Image 1 (cartoon, rainbow, N blue to C red):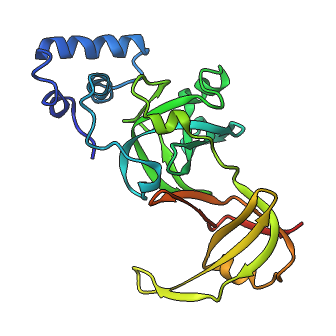
Image 2 (cartoon, one colour):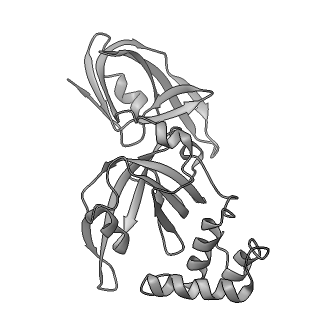
Length: 256
């Protein structure tokens, strides 16, 4: 939930006087060409002082509608694009894929933040911190955005060790189908039926088990044991120290 600068000040009132706090807000706004409002500048101060801990999340725990702070390493950068808003102004957006050792997600940067990529302040393998980002279900799965009240920090000093050491998995798998488990049905939270199955793919690096959901369960029935397939746009997670591979709605299963 968005907090005002007065609410944020309560987190550091033992470190700074109110006048010092207000002066620092003014300086941050001036240094950033007045692109930040008071509340966003205040959040930046709180975070720098290590008092923005309550909403720090791991990628594996992200859910639609959350507002949170996450760390991640950039593993892929897509092309930026321009678009026209309903009010006639033009905007820019660029999508990045990031990982934190627990999973991957899409990061959307808008307008002025696109310059961070185009001027190469952010590149592949750059560690970043998204402060007060908002999460939604995007076209390619879970997505975090840096909105009006969000900030992005490059190579933060307090990057967790798991982000530093993480070597991302590719987002596709190619190999031979060696096993397809029977389909299981279950009730979703909304009362509708869901479907899940598991397949084993023999790749050049060994055997991988992939969990398929709903529409992908139906699609895999068109394939036979022994066929070579390529499954694109998959999602990697870690649960109880074990890697899991899942399909998403936008995953693609095709013959090789």
